[in-house]
Length: 242
Image (tube, rainbow, N blue to C red):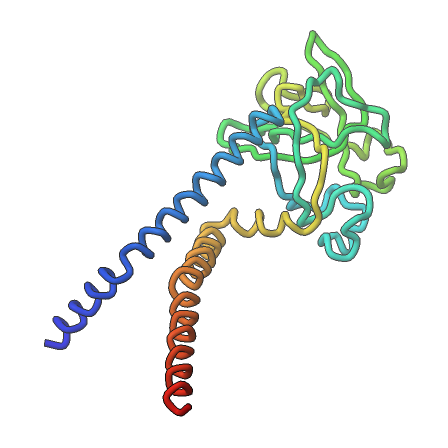
């Protein structure tokens, strides 16, 4: 009997709040569509597959002792926790006037057929053309003895290798792996993107959004409704007394 009573109460609750539940579902759908629309629009406008990226490595940071993006958020180069805006670029227009050269994003070279690769962010030091293909010599700003903006030696630069032909040459990385160049960075916001890269992070963010929507749709209206109902009673009581 208790189970049937609880089931009946649940049906009654759903029936009474059917419109609000529908509003919540519509709002969640709108948020998802809005996010996807923003992502695909960014890809089209910036002409790259990865228009927005979080910085997860300290290779570009010249403050190696505290490269968390909190101590020196507005200093030059990139920090862990930054969110960078990436724009597609023609390899022939990449600026190589070090130390004011472009910061580029590449697909990571593959050492073998089982390597899944990834993305790397690094600065251009020089570029060369070989058999009609442009290759870039790169270096992380915070790597080696001569950190940016000091001029590095060749031995301090990145040494790239890929088992596929024309993807690397003489330690340099090919234009085939070029994703785009960093055109803007936002401190701290990248931590959110790094957090939601994990399934548990996505679940937490979704739960927070749902809780906020439920509070706005159910808790606040219920509280304000009760408050509004008590006011007329007080006014009627005062009128009767007078």
